[in-house]
Amino acid sequence: MKHYLSVNDIDSLNHWVKEALKLKQQPIQREIGAGKTLGLLFFNNSLRTRLSTQKAAMNLGMESIVMNFNNEGWALEFEEGVVMDQGKSEHIKEAAQVISQYCDIIAIRAFPTLTDKEKDRAEEVLSGFKKYASVPIVNMESSIGHPLQALADAITIEEYKTKERPKVVLSWAPHPRALPHAVANSFVQMMQKSDVDFVITHPKGYELDPEITKDSKIETDQMNAFQNADFVYVKNWSSFKDYGKVINQDPNWTISNKQMSQTNKAKFMHCLPVRRNVVVADEVLDSDQSIVIHQANNRTYSAQLVLKKILEGLK
Ligand code: CP
Image: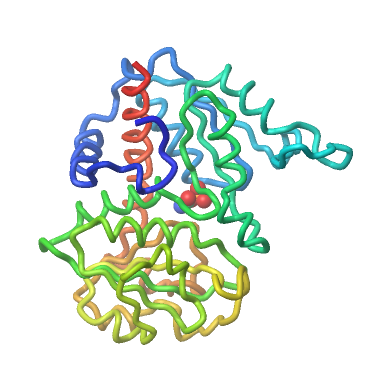
């Protein structure tokens, strides 16, 4: 595998999940990445992605170097042919080529603007690095996808499922700020690749990009959607149609025992960070049904599998 940019870079999900679970049993494989360097470039904040990806690199014997572009790096210009007489100090053309000389793999986190839909869909930062870097690129959450999270989610569902074809519900929940669509998008794509009965539920106006949801089932009655669910995956996202806007903060959509009582003792999932008693009530997050901590643990094995596959491709 050359790059890991989206869920579509997974050639066989079944094999990947099995391999990740095997890695989890025996994570220390330092010979695979010995002498190799992972560069982690952050244009936005992180806790899990930063630490789990570094931990994955350590398990594989890689060294990792981290740069926070927001407060450490030169402001990068991504447009071609521009007269750089304003605030941007360095062009992606030089930056990507230079970093490629220091790193064997470059991992990037760059969130959307949520104000310019076309720019976000073009994945300016990720695409810029892919175009000008000479080493593989890993997506640590871009404008439209978070495929490392989605792989960890698929691993977690495999571990916790108690039937061959579980019912999985992706539910929107309220949040005071406008959040990206990336986690929801990649989760939808992952569930489309999985053998699950999948339903998306959200209030009217919160439809995700139809190019992502395709023919996935959508139900705007949350209580109906939760009926007999085995897993509920909860996430806020801003409006896609009224791009980047918060158009509804209905507290009735906050996940509490009211919704969970409709389910088949469903496992509660969230990518974290999560706002307690806004997105989900304490009574759910602190219950035995919540598997969010296990889910976050699987971020290490998701990242480790991806790095391992890329390192194998470098040979
Ligand atoms: N879920 C996730 O990506 O967490 P961080 O934003 O903390 O990396």
